[in-house]
Image 1 (cartoon, rainbow, N blue to C red):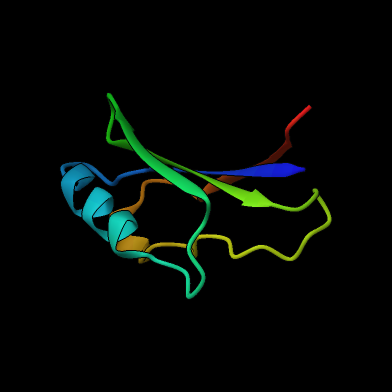
Image 2: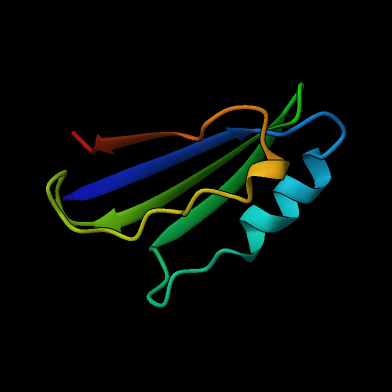
Length: 82
């Protein structure tokens, strides 16, 4: 089974590049099977990682970025492959 972790943050005004750089620098001790980073208008940054396991697995989530980089709290979702 595979779990996809989605992490999405909205950058503070004018800080989208810094937020993307910060997110890219976050690497867990054990790397995921796959990782993709995305950006969208409005300074949004999305990171999707794929891991073996199920929704109850203890998987390494991306942490919250420094507060000054974000305009609102981070959103996180877990999806299980079907």
